[in-house]
Image (cartoon, rainbow, N blue to C red; front, top):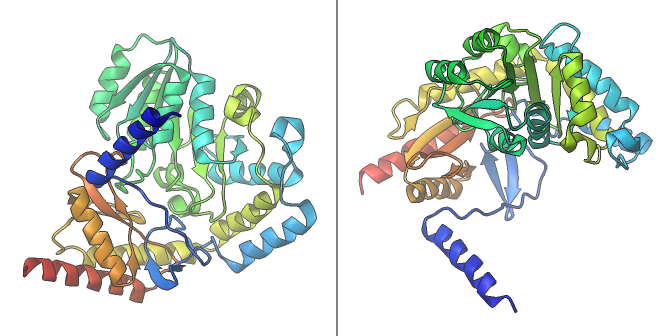
Length: 394
């Protein structure tokens, strides 16, 4: 019996619990939305990335139901075997035309954003090449760089000068700059115009992970459109399980880049395709993103309401104009205590702790959705102020 091995795992798990870093899943007994049922109790949820409220939208649900009847519930194989269906083909064409990172762009869909970023970096870069990444990038960009076995250089968050020095010093035959567009735990934006200037100056690819900007910024087209950017050296990755409300991801770029991924990217070639029913649901979600600007306007109003009401809270509110509103608490245990106090009052706001965020920057990550009401946001602010007042008198 491997008792020593098990004892080692148990000791490591106990150390995580002692440090306040253990993680637990929460089973939801209702559809995703601004209100969810947990342990038989309704909570107002500020935890989801369902920024436009499409995860349980009636039209999207109906499209999935109808598509399941027509196409079944599985793709059956990888896209290059027999898993690529006409709904996938149509969705890719519509996504490429919508985000348009360059003239004549193509798109390729993936089952997850994690796989998409692994595919991009491991297909393009090799041992002699160099990848330059913001230190606050999502883990999948870091893992993609490691999988590529390229030289991996991480520059301080949004520090364009440091990146420029690193690019100038590199002798790598191929260079890739990789960045989140909207940083998932801070809610701020990458300086994409300056990054594209550096990519032009150093003949580098610029990989933009727009998981949290697609559907929300740039009138729904994403962060590239927000900044008015287009270039053949741009590689755009957008996820489809956040603002689009369903599941999956896509890469949009110059046709030669997309064909390279299709031919050589192992995470694409060796993964079973997403079900075609999801592609049909996503086509309806994309139509809503295109045509219903009222959802984005409502979301922006809620962001402004929250920021105005949170200004005098004792926890530091990071400067974010996006749906991600982080309140920095610092200590992991105190952050968990604040999240628990909100849960007792009927609110679900996740506590984010290291290693997801840097040490001593544990935080509440308030995620706003167009499906929330002004009353929901006011109630959350009231609860936060009540907890702060109680703490000040103890």
